[in-house]
Length: 279
Image (cartoon, rainbow, N blue to C red; front, side, top):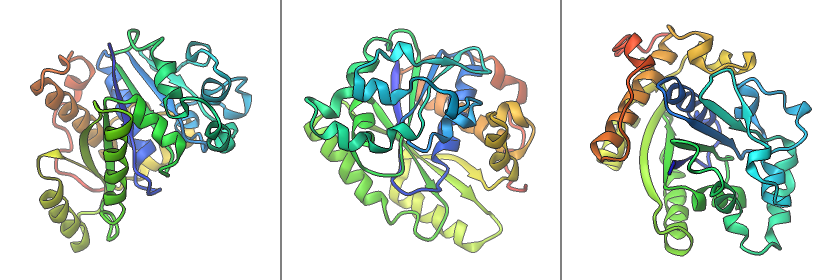
């Protein structure tokens, strides 16, 4: 059975989609069978992996609202072991459509039961909100990974997100856990970044990943070329840091006996750029 992990933060612009896309890509390159589900109406993960949103005949919208089998919407990507369940603007009104439906919070959970034995990991890129789409993602997940931007207001909205996660745990999904918190968009040249890192370490303690993702021009460019950073520029600091994060993600899960690391692609670039935050 796969591990289903939501990448979630209701604050936009924190590196959520960048994290979902690049973690999924590196895990697939490491040898795991991975499905990335885009449940954000903006469809940035979909275009970021190289799928033309305008040409899609069916998406995760059809799965949630029209009870399509998710198998019908899964597409291949440039990475052999990475599959994609795409999204586009059709999802925009889906929250309203779901309101009147029976078991509306479990639509995604029900859908992925048909495929959970076909993948090692299912990552869900959530929208920047705490609405019905995010509730569906959290209800379907075993854990939630939370990117946190290294900015002044970074921790401000986390309490509301944690409250939502607690409510979902109490009412819909008692198995839901916090996978961890990942600091993103760091600029080590500023005192503010250091202050945010210090606050985050005090607040999140052992749930905070030691890897910190820097601001990096190449990370911003890659989606416009429809490629994860591992395919766009695997030697840039952004790629090196997401590869480092993927290693840490695997190590942590292995220490908890959740999954056994496979050790293929990641060993090729071991420990490059470990302390570099330059563009």
